[in-house]
Image (cartoon, rainbow, N blue to C red; front, side):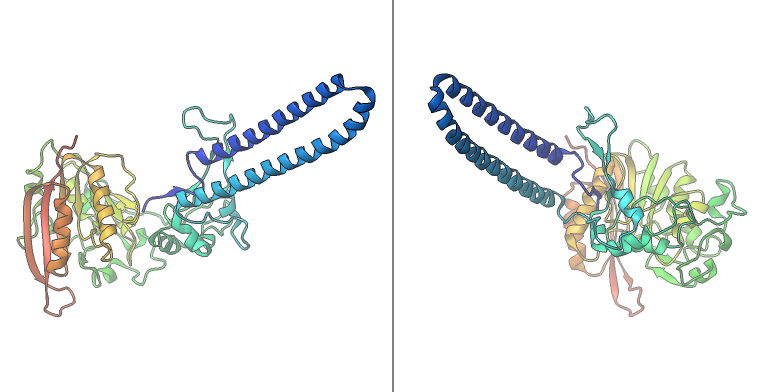
Length: 420
């Protein structure tokens, strides 16, 4: 889900409003000029007696006429303002955040106030003011947003990262900036890169507030997701064998996949990358990878950063903040599970396609399809993009719940075509 400004960003509607008012004033001035000239003509062409008697009568009639015309113009302006407000709502797709409502945090009001450009209209962009950009769904969680923005200016920020994540998961993304100091912990004993890639991260180097587990040992005993079982154990578990040792036909090795590409691999994007192991393996091959993260039941972002890797804290509803045709490859592990909503999956796939360069690789890694119907839906969607199938493997595994029911898994490496 992408972000929008709380006002129309290009300023078109505001310029139309200004143009409307300007036109109304011009009409009034022209009408006044015409009336004045009419008076002058009458004064010079009539007799003194007639002038006096008719002047009062004519003045009364003219004043009434002017009053009617002014009322008509004001009604037109009011009608145009209402139409313009309706247009704004239709363009934005929601009601704008009402900053006048009671109990709204002052910092939120201050952040969202528009700032006039000091030199007026910008000739390049056409805007006259800067407006803050926040996610449009923030208006649906305004009480939680106000709670997030309730803090002491220049003081310590509340320990509320979980509130921020709740807002993000509700579509309130990006969040407003804050003028407080985020909580931090001393990062003691961090190893230099590349040693840091496979060194265990100390419990004291991350913030555990708002989490049930308070140590990585606890996390490693939990099943956080289908793809993260013991994923914080960089020494004794399977994590340090991923992508270099296969446990089945659906698990591709990094070197085999990289050999399929053309033009080499320099930068990539990992969606649903767990604890960052894919990025670590790529870093060993001098390839830079950005890993999308959320701290779901674990301090995933801090863990990845402690390994010397780049975590990007955002939800999959957010439009990826990268320019078109940027990445040499995109790696997806379970990230295409969009709550069973095909239209959301379609939007996500088109955004993945947008940031992947022509000739780049789309690596779908062990994506779980609950049944053949879901597999067919995903296959049909992928085929719409006309990617070249370099590897395509469908397998079955026992479901993660332990019921013995088989689940369908799809792994694929696809190459984006050149489009002109």
